[in-house]
Length: 492
Length: 85
Image (cartoon, rainbow over all chains, first blue to last red; front, side, top):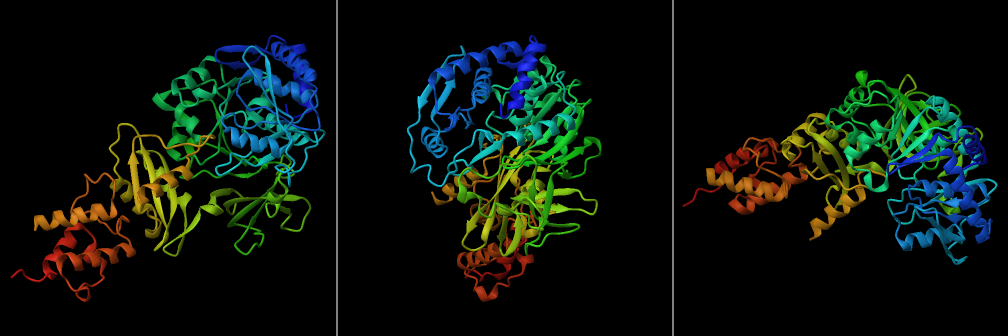
């Protein structure tokens, strides 16, 4: 969807391999011919609406073949499309569409009928936001937005084309592949597992929005549809690897979104005996920037994010803002061939999209990620700059504490948050889900932590339970919610 | 002594392990090494012992070994509190 080349490629697949399956959803197969026909019908319906092409459309990113066809239609007709999460509340959606100066919110039902709601123009709400040039960007993604209104991130068409070319060749993807698409359609991961897959003429198996935690269903999808490529956050990999499930047909597994603890890697190795494993690092603003091939059998305690992708420049800046030449730890700045030109809201770009810190050409994105570079040039994610807190005066990385707790064999998942404390500055709170059937207690977990962490980094409170952690829309532990609930509990 | 151990245990649970499963909290569990009582917590323990058992604060050395476990705290209180007349 995000480029004309994609549209050309799709038209080609529909001509040359009309009966090849493009999409699988809810047990229904959509061939490339059907997808092209559906997109044609929707393009005609769009034309009849006669919407202003200078204003983007808003298509809530429902993960259905019809929505994907609508996106293809809109794009081919010369529209730029904002694709927010379908789960956004009306107020946030209203704000986003006004900021992007959208003309209408469009949805399509499962019979292919187009519905539209006009968006009133609101120049006050759009003040400070760039207008979008459809000849440059056809897609507006949003950040996951853990706080407040998501930020709008335009994806340039040529940036997508470069990304699709890299991903296709790096993962050796062809029309023979079947890709499991687990992430929400509004998420940048879809640029690979939906849009790159379709561009190549492969089969994309969509995990339905309400099935994302249904382990049995996920396992059936992988087995029944001959999936060869699986990309997802650790939660997906946990769900897929339960009950000693095995998927000999999968040849590529992409780990992304969060660090993968070694016990999970070991299980992945057993579950996907024919696969190569890639730890991929990136964000909505830059798309993928680092990759590292992992051998689960030889994996260490931690897995590096590896080296920059071809064409990606990565700089590590120390606390004084000096560019580190060799090994060291600091904040990561990247410049990728796939990155956005900046958030739609101009003032958000200040200090975030910056001139090359080493004085060279280009614009760098300040990631807020703390990485270490070792003597071999491998990069290791240490956490976020905003995960650094002072506990009783000692600089403490909340993420490191979390990683240590997560490494306990009885821990299914762990989240550690820093709570402001009048005495200590911050104190750490750990929220942990134990593996079913284990008798892990908070005291045992404390003992484990004490064996691996400096004293100041031991959480002052440790909650161990059996219920899964609350999650964000993108499947990561909702640390803000955990923090808020804990603080509320203490004030009550 | 066992009443005292129970009292101390109850205090530690309420003050430092609120809401946590403490069924496996034994009298010799190392409260300091395991991060239950930190340096700021130690001050709170001392102040509590002083009030609850009428031990002058000046008589309570801020030495972690006295407070390393429930048993150690109970032992310290036993030796330091004024004899009941």
